Every structure is written in structure tokens, then in C-alpha cells.
Image 1 (cartoon, one colour):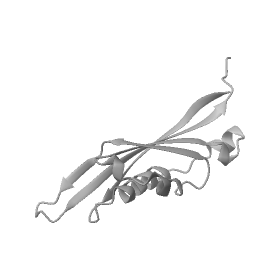
Image 2 (cartoon, rainbow, N blue to C red):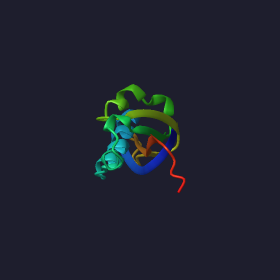
Image 3 (cartoon, one colour):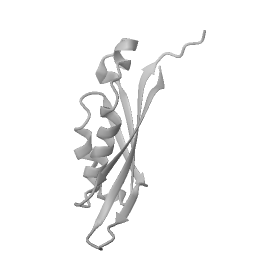
Length: 117
């Protein structure tokens, strides 16, 4: 079997007031997931739990993200989450805080036999 990529989804999330990197990442994940209705598991005859879900998140302070809290967003499949430096931190013009922007890339794969036709 070979891990075969079938879907790429992208999203963006923010934490406008609370400087919460985990919440910004959660919103980016939901943005990527909830704008799509994909039936790839059914189309290939796989159970939904067979989905291999690779999540790449970008925020300015990756160490501030609680990966365990984000795993609960996925209703099925086998998510693996990595966080790297990316996204943006935007200081508010009045100096009252920082807005956090997170980016998410979600790649859905299955272990499949390659087609050599």
C-alpha cells in the first residue's frame, strides 16, 4: 500500500483580542474543513476512519499552540498536526494588543494500491 494524497484544503483563522494561538489555529482548521463537503472515503470504498489527515499550521509563536486541543476538532480519521513559524502577528495601532493570524493546510490521504494502467 502507498500513502496517496487525494485532497488539499486551506484555511485561515484569527484571534483578534485574546492573543490565543491555539484558537487561531482551531479557526484556521475549521475554515479549511467546513467550507468543503467531501465524500472521498465513500467514493473509494474506505471507512472515514481510514483517512490519513496531515495538518500543517503556521503561526508566529508555534510553541504557544496546544496540539492536543486541536486533535478533537476532527470527527474521524487519523490527524497528525505540525506547527511551524508562519502566519502573522499584527499589532493594533493603539498599542492595546496583537491580532494573531494562523494559516492551515490540510492534506487528506489514504493507503491505496497504485493504479498502473
